[in-house]
Length: 475
Image (cartoon, rainbow, N blue to C red; front, side, top):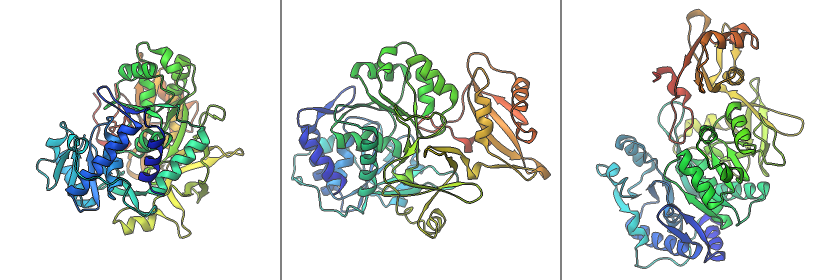
């Protein structure tokens, strides 16, 4: 079965229920199904190319654009509306896109590119011939191609098949016991796997309601959570940290049954602050774009803070090499990067396991912990230092909300440890932080330099961008 077929069946089961809404519009299952068919008709006539770009903010119509592309037999390529035209042009060329679905606010971004822009309103208003059923497609063919930001070089295309996305969503539904009665808040962008699967594919398969927001704002998001009685909220850690310091709306946030944190490590201060404020444990999970994305997840009745939970059904995990690299295989793992044969040769082991590049450990009960990133290892005087270990110690200091640790060149010693600290109301003194670390860490792990900052460099989802810290000048 393809993703378009599965979504079509789900929407037919919920013809009168609102399944997609934003501040201005809403779609019942029947209306969204009609919109998907109309979008498919418009896109089928717009291009004979195999891929269609989608350059939209989060909105109630987004599912119609994405599923409509699949319905027409195309691969959907969600694009980041915060990119500059030159950055978009690289993706257009790399993916071979000649048509992009745009909103009024994003049309200017592609005005100078060699593509045709099709307004979302044209898809919804299309009255020409439209396929009554999805175009036949191979379930193991590419449904969606996402681009990773990458730690260096140009972004890489990650082709995810219908099977990849369906298997991951169904495993999550099974593990978390989700139903069509859930209400999701969609604030993570669709050009990231975490947002695409968790806020679009999964709820569409359930026939559940999603309230989409074009961007995250703690007070506005908290108000929607209360108004719509949101039960599932997936976000990155910084969003939960902001919610814990937001004004009011406690009642609504206490009602969120599944507040799921992913995308990066969950700082203890955010976890503890959320629990103290709303009486709910944040549920940390783990995944990558290349794995559709979720590999492991904590749940309310099986939550082990400090870990990312147990692997989902169908996901196999092993720890390999002296660094205990997490290697995985399963139905959600991509087949390989788009047109990157050399990188694919490194991404997979000889026996077919995907190399995540993360280091970890598994406890006796099968809970997975992430201990660091292999590329982020700091080597000082021959000693290996895991930044996450130092970050966790700094996170225990009163008033530290978040810490980021990197290495910087240090002559014959290799690298020196440096720390960037995001404080609460009372910024700590660097010397106090140094003493605190010395009491808990070997001397070679203690940061040589501390930078106290009002914020840290982040990507479009709020995820910390460690690679930007080396050249970053704090405000």
